[in-house]
Amino acid sequence: MVLIGVALIIIGFALRLNSLVVVTVAGLVTGLIAGMPIKEIITQFGEAFTTNRYMSILIVTLPVIGLLERSGLQNQAGHLVSKIKAATAGRILTIYLLIHEIGAALGLNSIGGHPQTVRPLIAPMAEGAAEAKYGEVPEKEKEEIRAHAAAADNIGLFFGEDIFVAVGAILLMKGFFDQNGIEADPISMALWGIPTAIFVFIVHSIRLYFFDKKLDRKLRGKTENTPPISKKDVS
Image 1 (cartoon, rainbow, N blue to C red):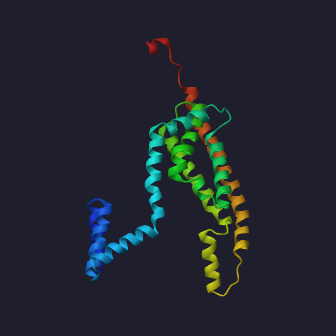
Image 2 (cartoon, rainbow, N blue to C red):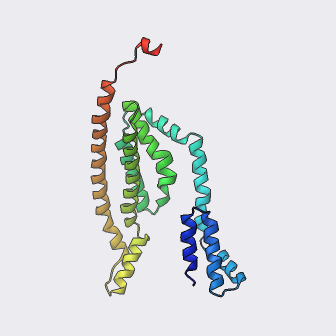
Image 3 (cartoon, rainbow, N blue to C red):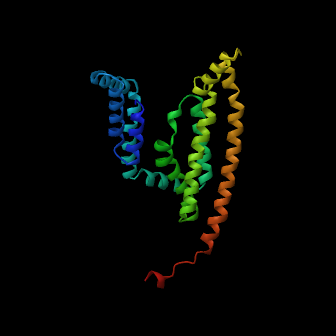
């Protein structure tokens, strides 16, 4: 009977009801069926919110990013990069990959991230570099640039954070080895992540280099084949 709360969540999400209301009602129903006093149920809600209050940072972060985008942050980022003649989409993403990987190795994971960095800054900068070089970029190529921007963020974080000794992956491996009677030094495990991170950076930089070449083949031909606009067309 206690699992009725799970069924309520499934039904509420299927009906696209307010998720906060659905989860709250499911929690109340589950507690009442389990025989808990209403006061204790509400106390559990309060304690859970207090314990995980850091999650409420997202409530502040996402609206701020939305306001920045509405005020033209993406346009300004693209416009700024378009003034740099040597900038290309691949080079910008390579620089971001390096910065994010080094930051993650030092435990500064918050430097990057899809909602706070890739979407409002990195992807528009890479698109702006491509538009400055080739003019109007087709939607398909824009989506590829955005996908590569997200990939650079994931790769930089994934392999960079393995160098940081206090990361969850290192601590998880340390605990696993201890349970099986194997001595392992967390610092040694973190140091062994350095060669992997360097190799990954080289490999993905080469991928981004060839991505630039791919954009050059596709978009330069379209730019050269585009007929000039005559005065008659303008009139």
